Amino acid sequence: MSYTFQFRDVFASWPFLLQGLGTTLYLSTVTMLLGLAIGVAGAAARLYSGPFLRSAVGAYVEVIRNTPLLIQLFIVFFGLPSLGLRLDALTAALISLTINLGAYSVEIVRAGLQAIPKPQIEAGHSLGLSGVQVFRYIIIMPALKLMFPALASQFILLMLATSIASQISVPELFHAASIIQSRTFRDFEVYSAIAVLYLTLALTLRGVFATIYKLAFDQR
Amino acid sequence: MIREFGPIDVLFLVGAIRWTVLLTLAAFAGGALIGLLISVMRVSNVLVLQAIAVCFIQIIQGTPLLVLLFVFFFGLPIFGLPVLPWIAATAAFSIYAGAFLGEIWRGALQSIPRTQWEAGGSLGLGFAEQLRWIIIPQSVRIAIPPTVGFLVQLIKNTSLAATIGFVELTREGQMTTAATFQPFTVYITVAFFYFLMCFPLSQWSRTLERKLHVAA
Image 1 (cartoon, each protein chain N blue to C red):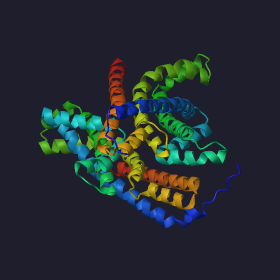
Image 2 (image 1 turned 60 degrees about the horizontal axis):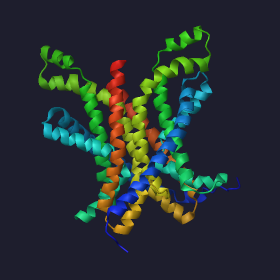
Image 3 (image 1 turned 120 degrees about the vertical axis):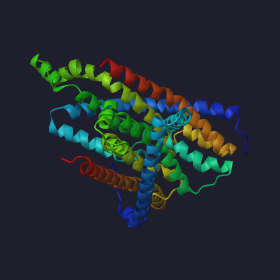
Image 4 (image 1 turned 60 degrees about the vertical axis):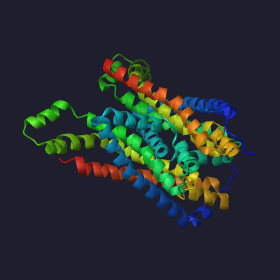
């Protein structure tokens, strides 16, 4: 081991890394919201709609969950222009990440909704609750509680996966790191520095989700 | 020279699949060893070992795989190893698989009731013997479906090895795109091949889950 670690150049580019971190946070937040919306809509379609829409959503989920995110990004960013649809890198990344997260969310939300036993819903009706009340107190709140942990870890995986958007030149954290690397040649230092940043972000997110869970569902 | 995307390119892609498969298998083998160690450390009674295992899982699961790959790729020369993509890829994917398999298998080990350990203890078995003869045999059936499910994640994630120049299916796709300039056709084909590998495994994992769940 005769290697001399030099973090000085990395720390000198601190503002640049922070800028990348901002884009990472933006990508993650927008994708989480849109992905969750797709998840709820898709799960509703899978459970309550006609056979055509049901199998269409099923096919969407299977195709997306069984192909790599990197290839999905490449198809949207490099492939679609040949069909006449030219997107900038950030939009392409937002679209692919949302489609990707959406497929996983559909499955999580569907499993959560299906986990509510039918007799419980019938019991609600026989107690004289209205349809809205049954949905509000008997289906949604318990189902949300059930699906929350799985959704939270899927969101954290998504946040980490936004690093893949660097491969289509989205200026997020990983991309910022590779630019610093090509300027300073301090490759190991810069990548371990962003590893720490991502780790901090992941642990913070986990803490935030745990707090939300406690506030929303532990009402005793 | 730009040429049309033809049957020969499809053959190149098919040829590259074996490197995806090989990398997946190598990472799975390495990950299984690490995962076994980590999961056993998690259920051991030694607090220090538990803490080390928890930290390992938290750190690896909280870092993007892409970053892990690059840290290994550029970290190799520090330890006097040559900068070869396949070494970095195998090492990074093994560590990554180790953290996730460790967590999956810990869950399986912990799902066995405490009384089973105690029964083993009262028969005079030590920790290792209880684990080997009582706990592991019972937890394998619980662990198999999520392990197969993780294999799908692993296959898909080996596509990231393309970023450090490891020539597998995705990298081959990039090179084919450079030669034919038909990214849409090429990447759809690549996606189709990944789907062919992953979909049967996903279905199998689901079937296993249903079967083992009902039998329990």
